[in-house]
Structures are given as structure tokens and as C-alpha cells.
Length: 459
Image (cartoon, rainbow, N blue to C red):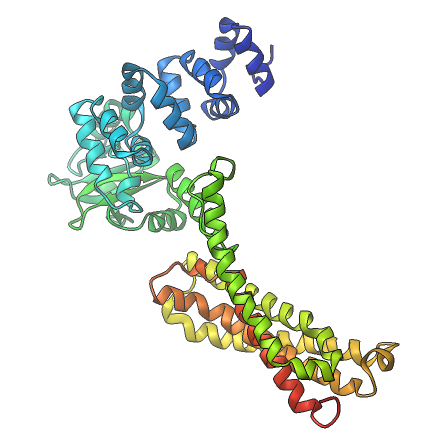
């Protein structure tokens, strides 16, 4: 039998109650793969398979499940089984589970834990929701600078089994204030009789427990480490954030930003697990706002109704004008929002960004305007379609494109700064939002240019 069973094969073994074969295969299957298989099953089969796992393996698999499946299992497990699962979870994984549950359920589960675990859980849950404190784990290995390398190695062997990682060892003083961090290889390659202090450079990176968790992600990316120390305001070591948790945060934040850029509220659950009414609500609110905004375009076009009737040819280029402005604005907004997320640009850089986008908008508008000019002026049926004043029509469209593309790039690049300055997520200034704004401006600009250039001919 293959060591890696498909979802169908797992279902067949459960239906046939072939537990011996199932346990044999599960014992050599990695926790992430088993978690995927569990999530593909219905509630009943998921419970049966999970109960068939050995306790240690069950705890490892549980940590890889999505929150809805974790909550479901906890709700259906007997108190003793739930206690074992919670006790075996790492503190950061336990915190992530407890903060997803209703308050009364969290309290019931806390009552199942040992006094030490309860104290630890309450401490982590006491930090702000999006803070590093919620993300950190207190399971790390720390040594003293006055110890010998041999003492440090003995301590690592003794405490390393319960640590989240031993790749990075932290050096603290007698008040537990962080002095330095060391890679394990630095300790292994040092003279066993030398003091730990002799291999320190006292240079390290750390974040505070109250910092936003995105800061921990950025710092880990910069320093290329698997773990980052977390301190309080006085530099006392409280815990660590590991790279696996940082990757989860990076994925969540990127997903949230992408959904906001798409013109909707961010989902709290995976797409298929989000309740239908909640999905409609999160998408409908922004769609309604954007729809009302687009109605302004209709109002503006009604204002220029006489001009459209006198020069119907102008109506042919309205989609071209407003889509070009919206596209350029969406490009600029996407670039600036992502650069803000990566901290490549900050609020103080707004003027530098404006100058760049001013030049870019003029260049891009000139490119599109030139294409439109050539397209209209040299089209084989230009007289039949555009009339005897086709050159003036071409110039009108070209100048309008330069103006609207310039406006779009400036609006798309500056709106994220405005939202950030007001305390909102820059991703809210999404592509649909920018496109709606530029659509209205595009129609006004287009017909204003047409009135100036075509007055006395078509108008």
C-alpha cells in the first residue's frame, strides 16, 4: 500500500473500519499532509480519524488544521482529550486557537489547563490582537554570558527539547535583560572552556511585545534568522517569534490587502468557509458605494447631453477615455500600496512619489495619446466615421488622454497617502475606488477639452 494515501483511499479505509492499515500509514505520514486529509473529510469521519491518531501525533496534526476545523474538534472532544491537545500545543499555537473561540468556550478550555499553562495563556491573550505579544512563544533557550561554552551546551541539551527552536540561543543577564543572540553553530565551534562572553558582539535585533506583528515579519526578512527575540520596554526577554509564525502572518496580511485592493472588506475565514450572508455583506457594502459613485458619471454625462447630441462621434471615445484613466490610476495605486506595505515608502515620501508619478503620468498619457491620434488620423474610413473634422477629434482625444492618465496616476498614487494619514489602511484606496473617481473626472475633462477644441465646428 502507498505510504501517502489519497483522500478517497482514506475515506474508504474509514468506511471499512480498517484501523490497523490506517494507523500504519498515518504513522509515516507528515502532520501537514494528515491535516490536509482531515480537512477534506466530513465532521464524523474527521473525528474518527483524529481519535485514531496517537496523542503526540494528534497534537502535531492539530496545529496544522485551519481554525474552523480546530474549533470543531475541540467542541466534540471529551474534556480530557481536549486538555491533552491544548497542553501539547506550543504557546503561540494555543493562543491563536483560544483567540478564535467565543469567550465562554475559551474560559472552559482555560479551566482544563494546568495553572502554569493558564498563566502563560492569559499573559499572551492580554496583548493587543494584532501585536507581537499574541504571536510570540516563551519556549526558548537562554544562557548567561559568564557561563563556559560547555555549560551552555549542557543547558541547551537539557532545555532544548521543550524549546520552539535551538538554532538561535539568547544571552541574558541575571535580570533576564537581553544581551545578544547566537547561532548554535557559533557555540558548537567555540572552545568549550571559553566563556560565552568571549564570542558575543552584543549586536542583535529585537521587537517589543506591543509592536504590530507585521514589524516582526519585516525584521525577520531583513536579518535572515529563524527566530526573533521579543522584549518589553526595558529590554527584558519575554519570548521569541519564529519564522513559521511570521510566514503565516505575511500570508494573512497579503491576502487581506489583496482583498481590499479588489474593492471589498477582508474575509475573516477562507473563501469556502465564509458564511454566504457574511460574504454578501462584505462585498455588497463596497459594491454599493462604488455603484453610487459610478452614478455620478451618468449625472455628468447628462450635463453634457447637448454636446453629445451635436457631436455623437464624441460618445465613441468615452469608454476609451475613462478606462485609460482608471487603468493608470489602478497601476499607481497598486504600486504605492504594495510599497507602503513593504515600507519602501513612508508618509514623508509623498512629494517624491508625486513628482515621479507626475512625470510618469505625462509620459504614459503622451504614449496613449499618440496611439489614439495616429489611430484616428490614419484610419481608412476616418471621414465616414469621424467626419470632416476628424483631425480636431483626434487632437481632442489625444489631449484628453494625456490629462486623464495624468489625473489617474496622481489620484492613484496620492490616495494611499491620504488614507494612511487619516489612520486607515492604504489598501482601502483600491483599484475600483480609484477607477470610480477617475471615471467621473474623465468625463468632465473629456467634454471640457472638446468644448475648447471643437467649438465653432462640431460644437
